[in-house]
Length: 198
Length: 272
Image (cartoon, rainbow over all chains, first blue to last red; front, side):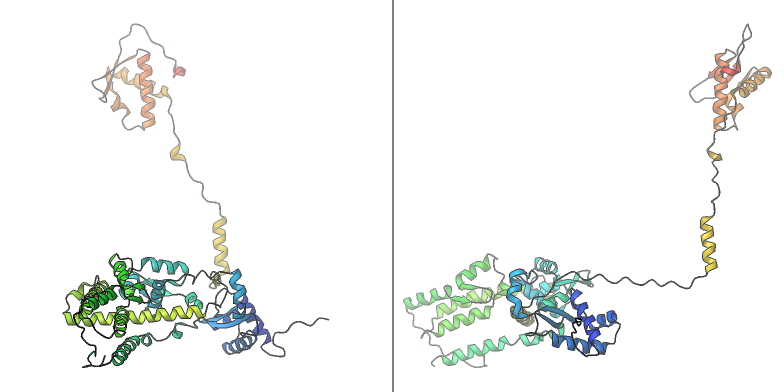
């Protein structure tokens, strides 16, 4: 008689892990622990333990499917080893041909959002209407209510976090860390001056 | 730059050939910036044609490229440096105006305050530009991550919880629903036509007592249908030659008077 395939043999969390595995296969976006708790009707601690077991099973280099913690939840993705094959069959329309203007606008919304188009334009010094419309169409930013003056405000979406492989927006580097190039510039000028013969 | 440090460049002699050579290097200065790659002259042209947003051009990078070019030479040409300073100052002014465009409150600032505000904005923009570069690098490093994209799953339907109900009240409501509704009366829609003969007799009786009468006066108080039938009776009497009708003007009272006849006129009521 054929024995049923057991994901994690002799583990009391086997059944729970299989349910989580099934939910993650069906889901088209990351599932939070809270959502898994509700769907499985189990305790958060046991869900996290089961996710740990699944993470070991579906880790990079061991399986073609990788379990990752991203965009505030857990989701399956293809392993990096299979990227070439995936690339031949599937496109990546969301992040394809993102311009410098689009990346700067994304940065403004990610760090300072929710913010309106005038806010973004003030930061970038140029009109951003078409760039914002393009990012909304790609699903990387979305409307997030209106400001005091009635202007529509935007925020980045969970898809943004997923495309950039971020567990959450907290995983972004601090904005202040990007201000150091003025000192670097000053240093280069000084070194140039010192290289010159007196 | 450290305060008090002086550039150790030698001032060039006024050699016309050297001046021309350095002047050429200002406009043909090769730039390799994030937003632009090519000669300085072309950058100026694109900026003036508004084909290249100046806000994205790193002016400090241009200055650095020029200084590096000068460092390769043994002598400093003041004419070339002067021209470069004028051009870069114009670029900076354009960039500053672009960054401060539409900010009416900034126009009221003192020059020193405006310069500080501009420096603050430039620093902010520099940080955002740095963040955008980080995102670009992140995107490149995540290029081999493939995952399934799809619409958000359907939200589970909320469970509708009913409050406790009284079966008797429910039954009463259902009984009210199945009860036959009261029949709607259409009495007000029915038209009751009195016989014409009734008015024939009435008008003949009036004319038996008086030689003439006023039609409106006789039918006043009747319904519109009864008035119409009475008018038909009037026409019948006129057709039979029993009466004479007079009306001074349209819509004026109709006066009915007895017609003097030689022979008795018979009228068959059934012809009405």
